[in-house]
Length: 559
Image (cartoon, rainbow, N blue to C red; front, top):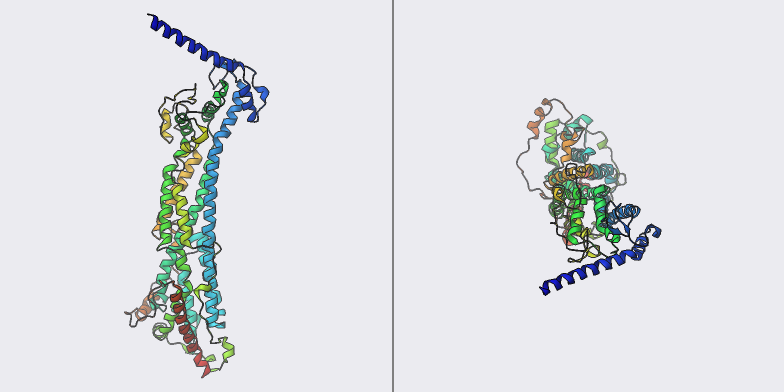
């Protein structure tokens, strides 16, 4: 009988001792006063010793170092304290992808400028005044490509633009190779609208159209995706915490002050439940956010491979030159088809008059344009290197929203083990950790969340991510789906017909039917070996061919 009695007395003494210690702490609120003033509040708000906590609305209503006024101020502070780590993570994410967007955008624009400069330098050396007098055609070509990159099909119908470019180039070259004839505008319209049937430039226009379309759609869509990321993060970061969230965070972070335990940190699971309740709407972004990132990563693979913008733009001068060589080699056949289909042109009176070599502006000298002499891009790196780097960042950004609670409830913000604040006392947190997302918050023990009212701002960003994901998937297949929503309806138009009646073409098509290839075109592919030796050899052979073309064009004037 003595043993149980002794145990009972011992337990009573321990309880009385603990109570006396806590009461002793509350008799002196100096630690609370110091911690409270360190937050920038007036130390005089804190009582010198514990007071009756019955009026408190959030913290335990017992003997307390807190007042109602302190509770209100600490609630405001808790809102800022919760927002700070989330804001810092969001700002870092915004900064990262805003920078990546700027790098890619600048790189693509520099590639366009350098491609235009490369072609200009090459053609000036090759043709002299003959090119300069027709340079506007190529300038307009690159300006249209730049507009398409910037604004897509809303600004430029790429198919129509390319068709017009080749038709215009054919018209100018056709006049040059047939200087002994005189052509009216109506005659040249006949020539232009049969450009595709004549195939004067070989297969280069078709292949270049496919390569340009894929590369430009992939590049501009990828850049738009990079631009969307910081926009979404910025808009989501403006979402305010609910009053119930603020109360829960205040209870978690500052109610230990009221019992004089200013150094006591919350239990990790307790923190997770509070933060998952506060960030429930943000967590619902995660599914579409991850789908969007997967689509970005897939398109990045395309940019490294078949849709590589750099590999298309860098040798575009070579490809256009190859097309011109094809026209040179097939000029007689093309002219004969045109004469059959459009009629025999009149002899040119001006052709009989002699013109000097000086008037032609052609010097006959050409120096191969070495690939090593190409201007470097402002980004100072290759597309492959840029893509490799951004892929790492995209992978790292996955599950950003659903892992925010874990990121916040870590390190010095929590106490490990059971020696922590559980919302009412320094003890183990017994509640089950609930899942992420709005639907799971119906059973959240620490935050009251209205699961029937999803946040409007976040829902709008989910919709924006879905839309961009569909664009990215279309771009992965080489399609610009913005043509399907173009208000002006230009996406389906064809250029160069110049005739509303079907009979306009049927009378001529019998003369322009394309027979099987009777010869071996000099160039059947537009994929070019980019090695320095291959590049120099290719440009050297083109130089000879282009010089030969120019000499052939000018020979009649020297006789």
